[in-house]
Image (cartoon, rainbow, N blue to C red; front, top):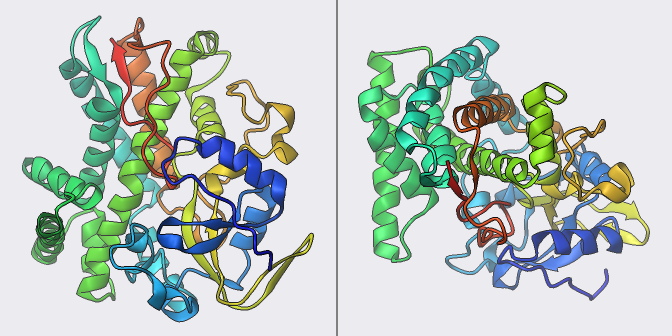
Length: 395
């Protein structure tokens, strides 16, 4: 194993520059994560697909990562790895949990969620302001849609949507003070537990009911909702925000969509390809040695960082224009939702949310423009997600 370790930027400020460099260096490259943890980074499209289908990689840190005891207290990536959720399960446990959760995303339920979103969006747009108003599209539109859609998915009574949204935000953005953060986490998990308990007496056509009636432990049920929030809210928020930004930066492509030359589905897929919300998904672990060729061997127990968002920018797939946003592009192939046994269960719902939200936004506010057209929006301070801290526009 090479002693060289790539200095991955943890702040998100050089996210795509890092990806381009990593893709040029080999099929897998050792990088330093926060806390001095070293992992293999995989960013090439075909390697990501190959390893996602490889049973020699596990997401179960408890069983397959010998370095877990060395993880420092308060490690920022720990929430992605430690909880016993479908995301981190292996073998039969993964199959059992995934089968249950997939039952909450049937075509009939997705269609109902689409219809409900279509009814809510005009009301939300009407509350944003009038033409020319200054609005942060990320916070006031994209994130609201992401949270409210999960409320609908979970079967939260509409009168409780504000409380449920607060619980989601407490999970996703806890306070820096440890005591306050612990109180927020306890409150949020308590809310989810109460929601599930209520479904035993008053079931509905929703995810919480599916989980409440399934063969799961109470902890597994609560964590299933929590992991859906952890994935669904930021991913949908950044997908809508990134797509809106790209359309405002490329008015000729927006005109092509409005004329019918291109579709909003094409906008969503090109955004997923070039500006995927999830860039680096931590972590997987080698159950045995994996020889990738080119002198690269991932040893048993080594952690692996999967750069799913990077796969869409691979020049081996998309050539010299891999970094160019183009809704007319014929091949929009990507692995933004992962691949293989851990492919994102909520991918169809995320696509629905983004398509409905974007079409409505640009129809309702046809003259919308960036408030700061000459400045790049500040990126989110993370290498895991690819998004913007805010997207101010004039409606």
